[in-house]
Length: 457
Image (tube, rainbow, N blue to C red; front, side, top):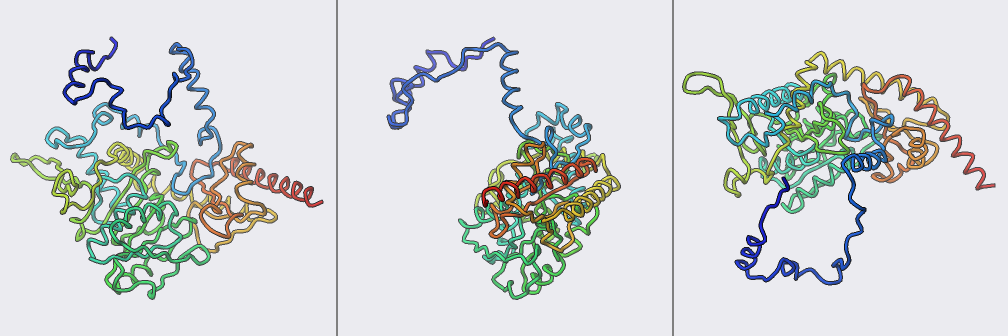
């Protein structure tokens, strides 16, 4: 049956009540200069099969990780997602549940969220995690505001080796609140602890580990520098699977961890929806944004789950709210819980080991190519920077014609890095794919030299 929301009589009644004669009067404030005075140029109506074929043809024009071999990372990683993850997440009782407002009838959703929080804490070495934030970048912005509230200070020191887009979002969050953001330069890919950069006006020091270049930072050193003057250490992370091998941020001294949960069972999805993670220490829990699910018992002594903490504007007075975040990524968090449950501690470690070993193999192969260099000597996890003998953007275009998503050109974000490419590997990449990638890099650079030589001649 065709869906008709209102009858003509109902529309006329509504127009009379609000004091206008026609629907066109509702648009009176739109200038004539921007109004379309002709009918839309639409194709003739298509049948269902024709529409599906047409939409499929449009979708096939996208270059994505299912059709091309992906070596792009920079906060979005092509990890293998076991099919069971989204079979579980796609169950009707999960897929249709927007958010657990009515705790007494949402016990399954709340238990899944509770398990998610627990596993995030175990992975990051923290004491409490929320459920959840929009993405890694917004989680970092919320973490900085949280640090301001806890310390009553208005200065945030952030490494320039933190993801450039995370830093942009951080400024968007902090500027209206009068929080001053001070950036520290990286040195050969990392940001060595500098106690002189932190003073008693500093609310937080922000470092990323592994950082945007894939290098491992001295988290413990920065924790000591921050804590010496009463500041907090915020550790950003774009792939928490690194802590299947690396010591997690908590034992290294992190006070707040802001992470991206996309690598935990969520596909690339052309950039979203993703999953923001915030984890912190128990003593800071009341300034944590969003929601927190806790376990309790009912009057019969049976275990149950409740929303223990809700510090959002929707639940408490605005002046007492920790954040105006109005929703969460419950389904993506559920996918992360299913993924971590299916892998278990050993599986997470195995994925991390595969990422590390494959990245080391690829890095060594690329370094052997004529004209290629590894500009940063610091240890890396599954992402690294390559300096090429031709501009990185041209290299990416050339490799895309051979079926590769080659990496992220860094000239867009950093001066002097026009010839640098950020390359990522995951457990999904095979030795054959990596070898073909190296051969394609070599061919692209040989062709580039011939073109340049021809022009010079």
